[in-house]
Amino acid sequence: MKVLKLKVILLFIASLILASCDNERITSVSPLLGDYKLIEYTSNISIDINDDNIKSKNLYEELNEFYFSRMSKIFNYDLQITDYYNIRIYTLLPVQMANDPIPGSGTFGNLFPAYELNLSQNLKSIVSYKKVYDELVNPSSIKEINVENQDKIILICDQFFYDYIENSWIKIETRSTFKKI
Image (cartoon, rainbow, N blue to C red; front, side, top):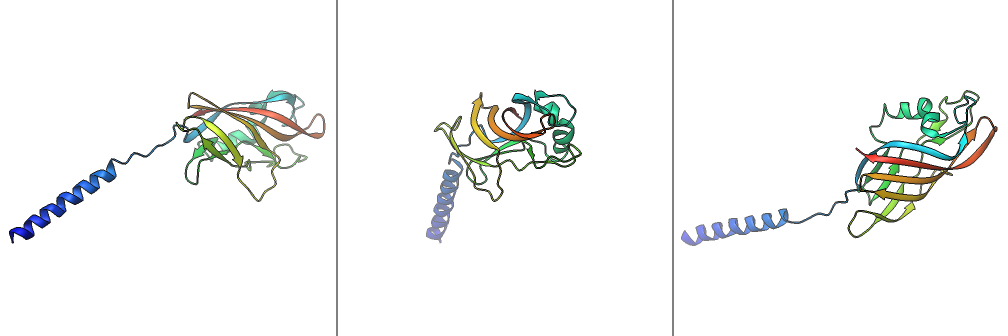
C-alpha cells in the first residue's frame, strides 16, 4: 500500500513538473501584430476622384464621403497585421471599380491585395514582403512598407483612380500612414 501511495505521489509530482515546463515555454510575438487606423492618405499628384471639380492630393478628403465614412461603420481598423496564417498585412485602402456617371455610387471597394511579410529576427521590422496570390486581378500594389516605432506603418503604393476632370484613369503613387490602435 505504501508503495502504491509513493507511486501516486511521484506520478503527481512528475505531472506538475511537466505542466509547469509547458507554461514556461516562451512564445515570441511581434509588436507589429494588431489593428491600425488610417491617419493620412495622400497622392503624389492632385486628382479629382469625387467629381467635385477640385483636384487635391489629400485622398482622405476626396474619398471620405464615398468610402472611408462607410467603411468605418463596418470595420474598426483600416490595416491589420495578423499571424493567423503566416504573417500577413491586410489593408482596407480603396480600389476604384468603375467610373460611374454618379460619382461614389458604389464604385469603391476594399479589394486591396494581401501581402505576406518576412519579419526581422527581433520581429520589430519588415525585411521583405510578397503579394498573396488572389483570384482577382488588382492593379493596386504596395511598393514600399516602412515601420516607425512599432506603432506606425507607412505604405507607398501604386493605385489607379479615375480623374473626373481629366476624364481618364490615372496611375498615382499614394502614401498612407496608419497608427496602431
